[in-house]
Length: 114
Length: 271
Ligand SMILES: Nc1nc2c(ncn2[C@@H]2O[C@H](COP(=O)(O)OP(=O)(O)OP(=O)(O)O)[C@@H](O)[C@H]2O)c(=O)[nH]1
Ligand SMILES: [Mg+2]
Ligand SMILES: [Zn+2]
Ligand SMILES: [Zn+2]
Image (tube, rainbow over all chains, first blue to last red; front, top):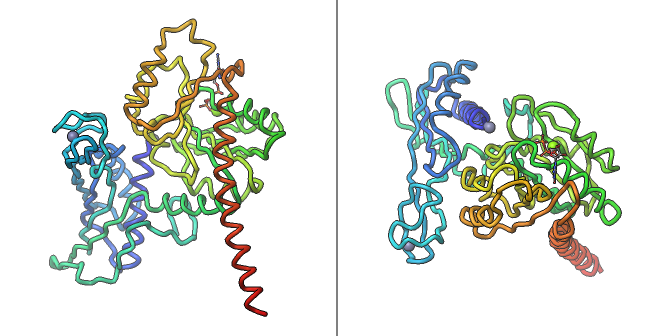
């Protein structure tokens, strides 16, 4: 389950930020996970619950995940269109030649610390 | 230091290098404050991958990342491939499995150097594991390096190792719907190898439907069919590798020529 290593990467990013900004506890961390990315947000939340307690920095921290909507540029009609599923056709013209332009992000957005 | 891999190397974070000294990023909430981070979760892996890619380019190594579900025939194909190529070009193999070094032993039996990575509970190889393996295996200059990933059609899709291409192996016993069920993997792959074609007469596997599914998730994917057991269809695969290698070598020759020209210019100007 690669969600576990991704969650460990999140914790590593938080540790890097703690060293840089000099804080000792994360109260809240907000991730952005695109709707077309390959990770399951529920699984990330589950893994964070398991991993957070290992370090005083993240112990008790809350994680919130915002979903970035899927978006694509359609090569057939030239429009930028919303895309719920990476295999779906263009909702405007039915074309299949879509270049994904949004919804694949996996980012640590911000955090509340003390 | 990374807590996961324990390495002390500096990691760069592609595209996310905005300053962390912008104290206007902080908003006070009593004793707590908000900090804008905006960092890609995979930045650490991608930093290692970029370093591997630079090493491969510098040394003229064509690195191919073989991905598939367990038992699709990666090691069998690699053994045959190594046998066929070893007289023509230097080859080396990195094997990734959760446990055992069986696959590396199978490769070594063919006469090629092989390094086994055991990921333990890990379900994929990551770029840092490859960086460490390279330091031990030291593949020859201008060689072909095959990396056999952990058998898993999901997780290895997310982790760039620095390879030139991902090769997805799908055996015909797995069903033609796999490209649609695991779209990330087939989207990330440059080549799909349909293996175990010797079994087709015994199955109702629909080759055309499978290729159509793969093209639907990845219109530019190349498809080859072969049997690693009988060797049938092996030549186009060997030619695909040779063609990619010519490309890698052409790039290396170009950058060596540029370096040479720079040295000559320095020599000339120093009178
Ligand atoms: N009939 C047939 N069997 C094959 C072929 N290629 C591999 N096999 C068999 O499939 C089984 C698995 O092959 P491996 O090469 O170990 O597969 P793998 O993908 O390396 O497996 P893991 O490393 O465990 O994920 C073995 O019993 C092979 O003999 C083929 O082309 N035809
Ligand atoms: Mg194997
Ligand atoms: Zn996984
Ligand atoms: Zn359209």
